[in-house]
Amino acid sequence: MSAPRILSKATLPIGKTVRRRGPRTEVLTDKLCDDILSYVGPLLAKHKGCDILDGNPGAGLWSSKIHEFLKPRRHVLIEEDEAYMPLLRPYLDAPGSTYVHAPYDGGRPAGFARTLDEGYLPDQQALSKDDPRLNQPNNTLLVMANLTRSYISSKVNSELYKRHNVHALTTAAFTHSLFHQYGLIRMLLWVDEGVKDAMIPRSLAMNAYTMGFNWAANANIVADTSPDRLGRGSPDAGGVDVDFASAVQTARKMQWSGMKLPPGRSWEYHEKAWEMSTRLEHSEQPESLHHLLPEVTTRDTLAKDELQELELAYASGNLGRFLGQPTNGGSVQPRNIDPRFIRMLYLQKMEKFYQARRSRGSKPNEKYIAHLRLTRRMFETDFRLRSGKASNEEYMAATKAMHQMGEDCIAIEKSSMIPSSARMFRLARDNRNAYYVDPPFLMWDRRQYEPLKILKDELRATDGAALLDVQPKPPSRTITADELAYWKKFVELLYTRPSSTIKAALEHMAAGSSEVVLERVPSLSDLSRGGSLNPGMLSVRALSPELLDDVVQAYRSWIFRPDHVEKKLITKDLDWDDLIFTMAGVELPRRS
Image (cartoon, rainbow, N blue to C red):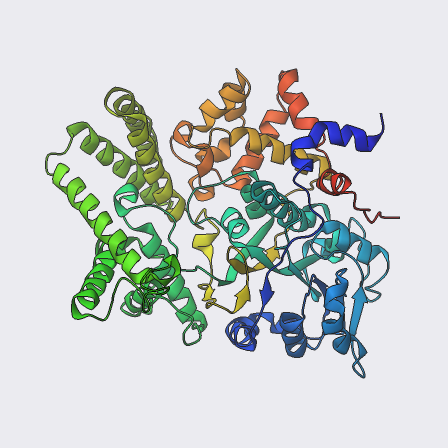
């Protein structure tokens, strides 16, 4: 049986959804480009005079603005869509132009590989595998790409493919492949809203793609169509409003570095965080925000303020149900409804919900209160000992207490809580701990600045979009492509049970593995690396990529690994490009 027929048989449900090309996000206004460069331009200045690999430049507006700012030595436009060539031709044909056209698909790793194979970067030299510069930033090359094009009609599969592309371009730094053969290369990537949320989540909603991306790179969201969306649930679920504490921390970093969002690009939550930040003493470091938590403004308060403003506007006649006069002889079309009115109704409904919950809370369940106190004590114990100032006696006593508190929490969950409540409490604990690890566990909480708000009609985008600034990190150890694939599949298996403890997840994956593996991972008890005095209570989603790597290596050293699990971990995946484009009948570019 030929390869295409095997692919067809194995992947027919996905193959049926393939289409040749879909829409992509386009930047429509000069002002958006200018505001982005005025905001982060100083951070990009080190790349002036560099080479640029520019995947899917489209109409070329964003590309031309970057070109004017950096004045690159060579700017390769990787664009295969002939429809854009009349718009790109003036850049290519201008006297003294440093633009070059590569007629390949700049939205896929294969397109970048073909461009490099064809010699479009003559001034970049591939480094030998023992050259230390492989693990150092190479500022003479910048990669730009628009990864928003849909290749598959199924939205779910299309998003998975886009995540795969971001993951592949980033983790190539670990294997020194693609353009990372020249060193660690910075990337400016336009991605869909869903891909952004998957790669830089604002809560512990993780998956294997997320963890691989976090392992391989540091990234900041430069611009976003929805920067004001919060991620960690209600203040009740988190115990404190960690989102606001994170926003205050970021505002302080921006003030220390002299960054400020351009006029009209901010939003209320950031502005309140900025006001809070200005009240702090200047001698204090940006990370020292633990003492602020009692005075943090919660989202409950912000929602009440917004509801009050909307209700006043409605009462005064400045807000109505509809934006304009009824059309078609009195009938009202759905598009005429004022979104502020819908927002007011939603906030009123949520206020009733919170009032009812607060009313029920006047007679709290003693077991729930006991659980809250235990999780708070566990958090405070871990937080206090991270300073490293505790004596050996204090450390041993705290370790014993943590194990007992963990057992007590589990007992309460099993005897007195419905599963959904237990999950909420565990999530609250994990969210707090993830934020107060140094550095914070979530890449979102490590951001150096807030995203710039993209205004309506500045992008042609179906579901929102964002610009990511991705800077690869050097690997902590030598990693082959096969080891990277094994790591990702292992994490995928663990993440079938993300809220479970690492012990339970390992047992579910391979019976008998937890006792052996956890004994070989002392870093799980290392507070400086995000571990815990009670590592058995650490959930899968609370483990950093580095700790997960320790777990993976410990598992691989276990000689009694079950064959059926090992087969899953070493079986090679079908190539995404083969999977999709063979089904569509599209001829793929092949590397020589």
